[in-house]
Every structure is written in structure tokens, then in C-alpha cells.
Image 1 (cartoon, rainbow, N blue to C red):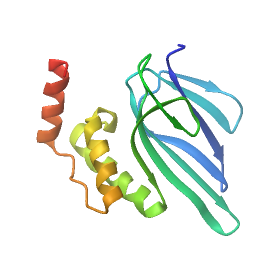
Image 2: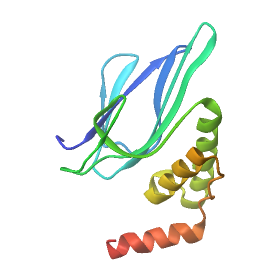
Image 3: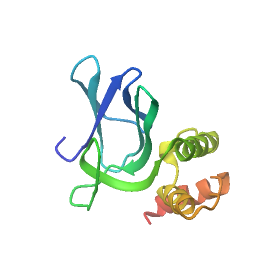
Image 4: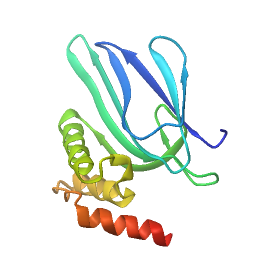
Length: 154
């Protein structure tokens, strides 16, 4: 399990929470009542959400969609993810996080599991959001093309 990606989760109600929106973890380590670590096999795509607040309201809302790297691949250093992962999408601020969550729901309507969505789609969403344009909706034809591409090994 040395090549697995570790994601540290936290649950401090009303103050700070880290959770996984999608992506199947291979193993879990419970540290205490509020903290646990999920381990992802290389190649697994997952969405990691971080939220924090103080006495005045929300101070942080972030979502990262990442792919657990294969051995020897370059990774991006991401908070709470060890040793890092391939970053497919990063968004911060509640309006953008909400937009990404809506796109995840729409992608799940097509695939049944957002972890099966083509990684290129999440890169597309990231780039479109950065430039202020509306991202395309993930559709069945795009998903079929991704499945065929995976079968060909491309």
C-alpha cells in the first residue's frame, strides 16, 4: 500500500469539515472520533471538499477533483492529500463549489458514478470556470467515447 494516496478527513461540526464527494477508497484508518484517513488506489478519481467557518460564517469552501497518481508520476501538492495527486479541477468559494457540485450531480445522472467520468472533462470544467465561461454538461455520447478510448488503452 506504499503507492496509495492518503486523504485526511476531519469532522468538527460547525467549524471545519473535510469529506469525499465521490471516489471509491480502498482502505480506511480511523484516527479518532473526528479524524480518519482514506487510502485510494493509483488511478482512482475522487472529489475532496474542504469547508471551514468561524463565528462570522463560512471562511473556506473548496473542492478538488484529483486522480491518485501511479508510481513514479508527477503529483501536485494538495492540502490533506499525501503524497499529492494529479489535480484535475480546483475551485474555491461557495458559488464555484456549488457549480461543481451541480455538474457532479449531472455527470452522475449519465454515468451512475462521477468517478467514472472522463478526467479530461474535469480539466475542461476547471479551465472554463477559470476563464468565466460556462462548462459543457457531461453527456452520454462523451461518456461512450471515453469508455471506448479506455478500452483501446489510449
